[in-house]
Amino acid sequence: MHSCSSSISPEKTCLLLIESTESTMHDTSLSTDRASANNDSIVNGPRNEDEVKMSIDEAMDAIGTGRFQNHILWAAGSCFMADSMEIMILSFLSPILQSEWNLTITQTATVTSVVFAGAMMGTLVLGPMSDKFGRMPIFILSGTIICIFGFGTAFTNEYVAFLLTRFMVGFGVGGLTVPFDTLAEFLPTETRGKYLIYIEYFWTLGSLGVTTFAFFTIEFGRSWRLFVLLCSIPCLVSVILGLIYVPESPRWLLSKGKHDKALHILRTAATTNGKDADLIFPHRNIKLHAEKDESTFRDLLRPRWRKLTLLLWFLWGAFAFTYYGTIMTVMRIFKKNNDYAFNYSAIFFSGFAEIVGTVVLVLLIDRIGRVRILVGSLVCGGIFVLLLCMTSMDNYPWVAIMFAFLARLSEMMLSCILWLCTAELLTTEIRTTGHSAANAVARIGGFISPYIVSDNSSLLLVGIFMLCVHLLGAYVASNLPETKGTHLGEVPFHDEHENENLHKKEIEVPIYEII
Image (tube, rainbow, N blue to C red; front, top):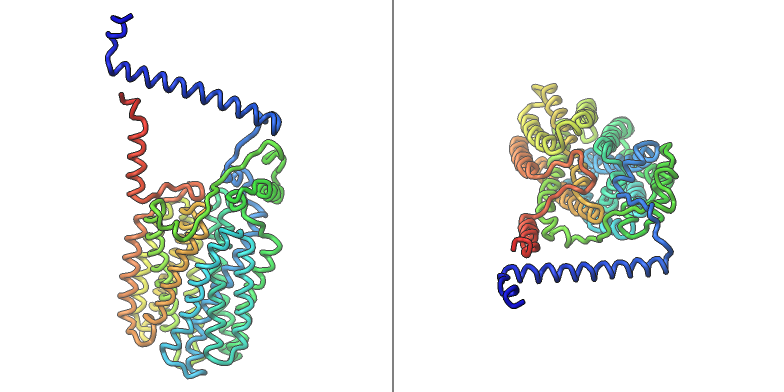
């Protein structure tokens, strides 16, 4: 016995001890599992061996796309149209109020900027509320705020009251990320990209609608109050459609542990789309799972999200500055000497570019990917805005109109793809908080743009500044990961510091295996 034991090396002795310990731990674990299973069967009855686990993405893919998503698209799209109209009307109102109320250039710029200030506050409040209380109630609340104060704007008679009502309209506009994210969370992977682009058609319709309403109410009727009233109607439609057709997001319900409610909504969605709900989601043997974490704005700057958050914040700030700056530049170039006179045909034609841009994006979105389109839109947008600022409307009107068309086409593609990428990159527990924070930063860009593109600045300097912002944005966008073909929120994108920590953990854990 003694000679046998002495022949065993220290390394082998260590290995035997580890194996013995592992065997003991394994046997103990099995005994514990059996005991747990026996207790579970005594309390809850025998476990169903046929229980099927399904992720929320698999559930959405099984439901498919149909009437159910179309209803939500119309409700969310109407909200997008309302947001577009409530912001675009300021391009027409600013010069009119400047003349009617004898406003200074700074006060005139504030007429537009105050909406973005309200929107920034709204995103910081309404976004986290939707993560805490649900998507549907904040959807309705946002639309109601825009509707009430949009109508109220038409009855203001002095500058301060006007700023107050527009601030509250902006506050409601700050909740615009909620209907967009609600639609995103109801879409299967295959059609998500195209559907989230379809909603942008409503934005464009709102933009064209503003020009049409302005032509009939301002050009002929000389009534900016009727103009404001007409532009508030789409938001009322959005609230009504939301109450009728938009249920709570199953992803949000699952993140809060409300499995039965989520399953009920999914079964209803399947039935509405013409699918057999009993076949896809049997009552007793289906178990859905999704993210269950909660988030705050502080979480966005933690290692897991820090780099992505900073990239998105810069892109959203640059996007808002360039998008609204481009529109204000177009309005500045196509405005006539009379306070109520605009070149409506040129403005309408340039606005039609947003429809063309959306169509082009639908054709390209699932072919060449998100990031390439994002970078290309930024580069082209900057070039065309600079060319527009260098072109004389008096000497070369059609050349100016062409550059305005191409600039707005590029800006619309940028808007669409950035909304889509943000929804796809963020997971359920952080989506509306992260989207709202990015949107809040965007409102800072929108707040600044009226002061930069004011009549005090030369068009050439405006064009050069806009080009620089576009190009810097293109460089930042090139660092985003591609989301084409991935499930919602499943793109691996972490801070380098966190990746290093994860890598160290992967190396350190199995040390005994190396021995």
